[in-house]
Image 1: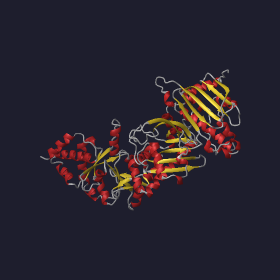
Image 2: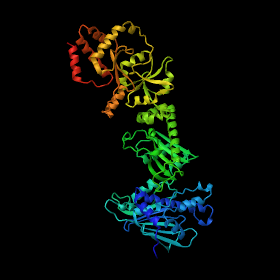
Image 3: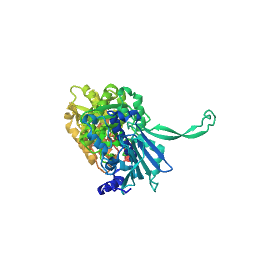
Length: 630
């Protein structure tokens, strides 16, 4: 029989298909199985109105056969099959989809009941990535004649009549020989095939079966100490068929959800939270989401891949669809399944369309509401979540110029100076004293370190609550918020705490104070931007406060991540003029200026240490202390 040629444009498309469109060769099995599922769908739908079909849903199946010796892989279905015209139109013309045409012919009400996956008519040709010859033996329902379509690729194809007893289609792939860097034999290995079905086609609605080779004790030797084994073949169903997210919630236990999560996302621990949602409307989809109990070891690295598993009618399209999760909820794992996705030609990537954005937006709200509910109803569980992923929520406040702060601000937790535990911003504001102007916070390396900061004393004496910021992102977070419930955030290290203090002592000794402050400023020079009489120190002699938009904690952060940035806070050295140490320095001015200068240097170095900033030369500091001890 004369070989028929593909159209010239089809040849180019076939070459493109094999070499460019698909990024993973293993995708071919998903495509062939999906086509088989579509063929069964068509006959199954027909059986609802045609008694002559003589088959019920339980009779349909997809069969895989791997012949290693002859390097042949066969995918067989008992679906609707094809006649000569179908073969010409669907396999002879690339990008002509019989499934797409079939769906368009259905009434609108019937389209909802038929899941047609193969919309583009190109998936079949992905098999040429692994096969050097493809035979398709098929018999259409209602026809007496079977046909064999045969092709070795772009050089064309033949169609001839053949023998086949039952309706359906066999796709017979002659797997290519192995070559350097290419192991095509893997697609003849039963466990590799089983894994690919599990990965891509686990939720196809019909059983995908294969005779699996296994070892069993020979009959009569089972009870012996050393039984004899023989090779047997057992017909095994490779797919689970019904996705857990498609089942009625009443039929699924939390243990079922936990098992699914641990198997699919390779976690040893149960998820902290499970979110199951079903949405019908502009975009119809189902989602099953999980919040892990612990952050993966690589979570805060570039290697971590965020995203949800993306399915279209139960067929895996993408392992990690990043577009479905905002960065601030990147810790969420799960699946999204919809028939409404606009897939591109290779069915590997999604087109960036409004359906995708709509799903992402609704999922974001769902996750936020779930976390807010956990915070309200199960504080202990939420604090477990916060310990693992709280930093991510803070990053979300800071990122994209505060675009998400209104969404995330009520999820924040900070340690409280008065409650001695984590509190929300709402709880803080509810406890604020009537005369209190600001939400006060203090930053440092740890809760214990912050607890001892001199600047906090006056606020404690007034009974004001202070939020402790012990992570490098904390100050950036509060700066990103700016306000909460119309209350501005104010650092205890700020040069102005906005307190109504009694300033009589300062006024009475203004001239003397000016002399002392000027002396210290002259001594320290450019080390400080300003020297001031403190309004906040109670029992401590000295502290550093920051002027302008950069705090000391921010300075430390930039020193670590961008050492050459030169980002430094404007230093204000505050002196407690009533403290004995400061008075000792003051008394030395005029009578022993050299000693007074040593005192000034010492007080400045102490202020640096209290602020957690490095002193210029530890050895000089030690010598300075020794000089003053003489």
